[in-house]
Image (tube, rainbow, N blue to C red; front, side, top):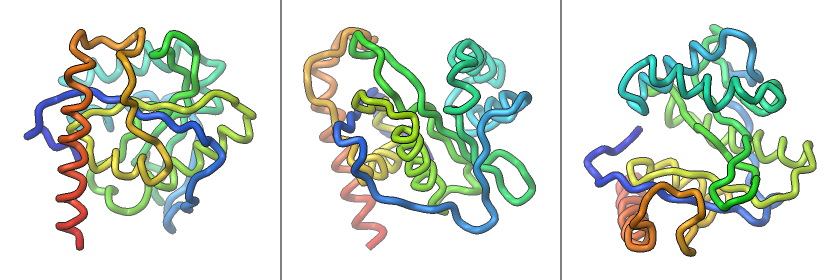
Length: 201
């Protein structure tokens, strides 16, 4: 669930020890599937329902631009979780990105339907994608992008060994104020994560 009460600031996380991570299985009633023709419509509906885009058309265009243009990756790196009715309820991809000026493996578009959150689906997805990274013998560090609104997800990513990127502005990062915004973002994120943990305790 996004927390849009916070200022929006994008952040990057990196995992260098790609073979070191906790392992979680899917809960009963769920199954994995790679992309199949038609899944792009369900993906767009999911992304729009989660308020990650301003319109369904925008979500459809994102999938077209970022995923359908890479059929070589789409068939075995775009992962979905289906419920017991075979409806798509969660997704994430082991993709490629070049925020650092070179091609690196990237965890991309992690999303779970609101009614299926807090059930361990993201942890299962992360486990499966990191397993897949080893199966494909990929050798770069793995990174992901997120934002202050997603501090609950960032808490999970840190559990899997992803660390905040605190270096200089990446070559292909959109913000012109990265070096000023990034420390503030991480201070805000970790403050919210600690409050979230205290609330759960």
